[in-house]
Image 1 (cartoon, rainbow, N blue to C red):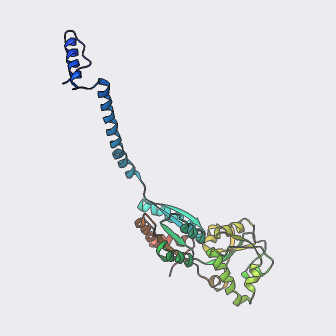
Image 2 (cartoon, rainbow, N blue to C red):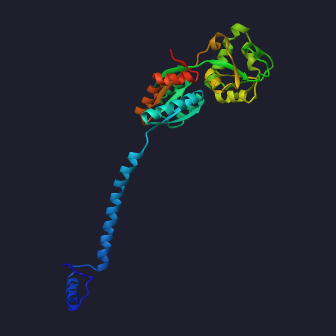
Length: 296
């Protein structure tokens, strides 16, 4: 039975009231307030069920693909440009984080999320592969160890042999790849400058940087007379330092860089695409621009 609660006209009013009372007494209708309450509840439930369907379509379409890359500090400038060009070409954002390769490896072991890891030596990459954090890796570029002095060169250093004098030397700590290469190079140079040369030079170390950028900064700021860095980092100083080549083509060491995809990556497809971009002629051109050498 349909009841018009809004109608209130003349002779029909009494008839409507009588019919309503009969229906009420027979239990065939509910109170007007309860009836409206049921309708409101139904509308609320319908709305709650519909909202997720509407919003899910909106958020998914606007989401930007991205990958996280942990890379050695010496790769900073090169990877920043690689990331920019990669995004422009594939519309995939690269979120890089730079530090010493050893620091990044520790971060990964402690649960830091990343899709790609790029190390300045083979050791830390191999350790992560053995522990199951990285699937596999590939060597993708090389660098060279050099000695840098401030542009004004107050200690008048012209060769690595001058480091035997009482100078202020800064190097990276022994856990960082460039620090490892530095100590190995000095030991190799014992064969040229005589036994004990390495120990004599290391006795003049006044500070140890946490990465190669820290070493370069101290030399640029005239806080040290000399420091060992990569040739690529010396290039980024934009003429604020002088470069002194080491005998034996970098002291007999050849820094090699490795890159790989982490097993925990949630976007391995784009991570692989980024590595392939680095290995492409376009990517190698950018690496060369920043002083890196092609991997043989």
